[in-house]
Amino acid sequence: MALRQDAVHRTGRIILRAGHVLEDEDIRSLRAWGVTEVQIAGDEVVSGKPA
Image (cartoon, rainbow, N blue to C red; front, side, top):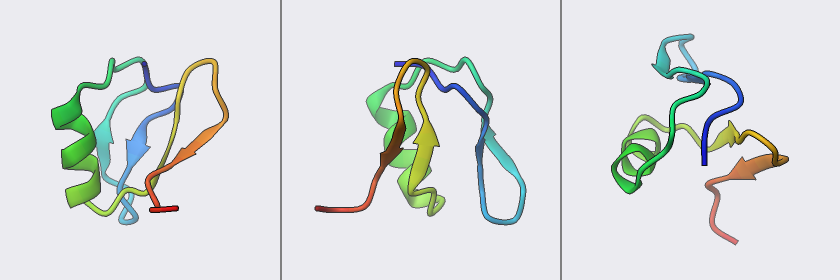
């Protein structure tokens, strides 16, 4: 799955660029940065918040 938009920290810092193909390590890094939602190409908003 690839990012539709840049994954951005709440301070505005870009963590991963749009088009980046996500790997498990990327998802762990995004969580560590506190990023809870990203836009995935072809999908709706994906939330990292627990159900």
